[in-house]
Length: 326
Image (cartoon, rainbow, N blue to C red; front, side, top):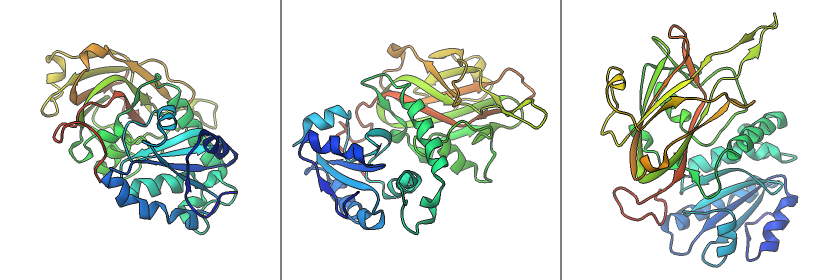
């Protein structure tokens, strides 16, 4: 049973003990980290709101072995564990994102989060989300990390894109590049192409990152009542450009030399494909332009998620990355 306070972790044995909980959330922090101090009072209120979730705090300077075990590269980082297995993490003092992720996973516990409506999701939905996260996490090489939390969301751009679940294309594009709220394989994409089969995205980073690979989650075909597969066309071709100051035009995608061009592999059962890049060409990346296309030029191409894998470099405007700002 979870305690009603945030437990201060001082040993590996205490981390092991967290595996007895359906859901545990660990705050990795440091005494020198300003954003850590800003969000700490909010984190300390969570045990009362989510009595069936275990909450813990780890000082990375006092527990370097634990921080290394979970590959903590910046603070604050909030790690979500289901019976000891990681299902999500949130980086930075982003209270809104932290609470959103917490509500999404609270239904992994026996009673969820009391009267919180978002935590009243069914346990089957939580299991599906957990499965998708596990699939996606298994595709990340050891020593590398998700880069989506250093995307400059306000400057994301998309061409020939339409939102399938909302009239707000801006929010839908941001959801496309969010590394949280991962769903199991679904047939309805977040974004699909509009006039033809081509999609084009401009993705700026806040850090000069090294990009190792791109994970793409495509719509998963579902059988209709007649036993036929139905669902949106997936992307089968990809082109990538680095460090462009702005998005390219579709005409430019045929003439401007690429850093990567190739096929998107067949997805797994949850719709995930890994596009491996030539790492040497993707050092100190400040932005990416990503072009996707399907096999049938007359059919819309759908995408559920796009996740970038690699290493964070120096913060482009503030020097070496040491902590996340709010």
